[in-house]
Image 1 (cartoon, helix red, strand yellow):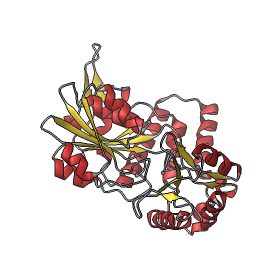
Image 2 (cartoon, helix red, strand yellow; image 1 turned 90 degrees about the vertical axis):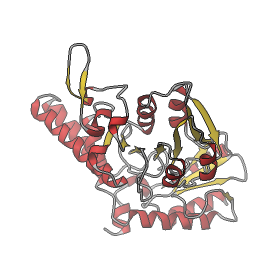
Image 3 (cartoon, one colour; image 1 turned 120 degrees about the vertical axis):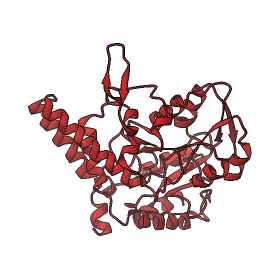
Length: 352
């Protein structure tokens, strides 16, 4: 598949320089066709019956295998969720943290991680987003390190495998800005989340959670899909592997759409995205202050010369879609494998 053929899958790119996959990726024509086809089928045939349920369960397994392949893990170790936030919450609740425990995190985390973290009641130690700072903050009370692989703010990539090895403490990784954007090697990481609506360009409310050792984590919010058998009291036998953490029934349209979205990715996607992100930095340097370190991610965050919100609105008027990061005086461009040099030129022209 050539670049032009791959890019042509996304109609929004005909009109806009769409640089916001860090929030929601562009939708491919095949994704919407799959969603519409499932809706049309359900309209005529309904959404019930043994054959229907079995088909949807099989599609879930195909999606599970597809996402597992993206982050390089085995499908049984992956739970299907509706968001990274849900995955983080499942881990933090399942660990049974209390006010006698500590969790080390960084000052650059998204609320999707810090919100569930605060709700545990554990002592939250916030440090600079740096591998050495994280390791230095670990004490005998530390039960978990919780951090992003790629920071949603600056685009810096943390060496999470190094953090796990240096601290010897379990680590929960927010993979929202890495899964599907860069090559991921989970390695010794204990828990890793996926937001499928971002760089995988799936429908909204789709995602996944990798659990290295499911037996170590309690099921605190069981869904019907968590169990193999249950009693009238509610006692149940959990499913094997990470399936016990599935957050519930994902709409059939979303399953179809996500499966189609996974099929749009060319084999050269990571190399192309990295090269284009590097060109984006080159285009912006000297025009604005770029804060993303070279070679770290497909996010390119920068400090604008004026008000960030006004700049984002002005760029949107010119058909350039980027994101303001509120309270941080930053604007973020998300560079995907589908991004063209023309998109980058439109961004630079809008800034100039």
